[in-house]
Length: 379
Image (cartoon, rainbow, N blue to C red; front, side):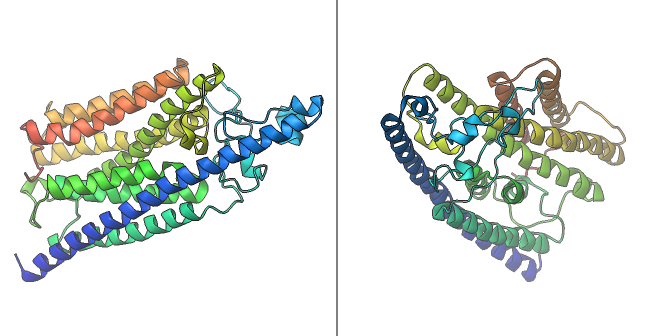
């Protein structure tokens, strides 16, 4: 091992540590934003309820969003549904999206800057939310530092930095954060910040504590250009699955909250006012899962081609191969059931979550406790 390689490896570990610290501060800022904005939305509800109580009977019939976190503009209610900007008929059975816990007109200014993150289309609102902006800025800074750690690891090892579990975790966490930031350009997913950044922190900590591996060369079977193709697509797909896992988990919470409110119960999850409706989360999660599934299909195909090049067979029922196929089957079942069998709502969310748990099982348990041709964890 040349001294320059060891030095770059040390720099990489330092960058990873700094990135984890920056992400931690960003995580706190995202959590602060949820708490602060939720409190502001509650104040808007109280003010709207008071205004409705003081108005005439005709005005009093206009929904004020009490209990769902939003004040609805009277003009928006009077407009035909086909003209409303927040209508969304996407989905397998064309259900119309309606404002719910976080979609009730605040994005268009009805709340006067109350802290709404997104409407039914998860578009950016006009209000200024300092904690959210600070959190995103810190996330960008952390991603830059994290990227430097990935690059220096690659320079130190003289290859792509995903040859063992430590490198896959650190690179996977970077790609997950990068994908989150890229999606933020088009969609207001800042409500996902605490969950995505929290998962990235867990991945970095697990990599450093449980899976740390010094800079070194790859085993002969991995010294192939297929490593770049096969694993890079797997990393990107896993990052997308991470986003949809967070959305599906929030969808379950939001669906339960909406059901409780509809039954006349109290709203005990104030921070969920910042999260779009369960249907909005389900629709976006479905689209992202469809893209990730295509990537995982290529992962499976390219892995088989690589196996033929390395071991002379496309498929050998190795444990890693089997679980890669299991993941493909679960997500294929999810897409098929939702698109053609009407499996929507909580059932679709649970299928998405089960798929991600299979991804985690494949990466952790299979790599550590099952011997096979894919035992390259570095442990």
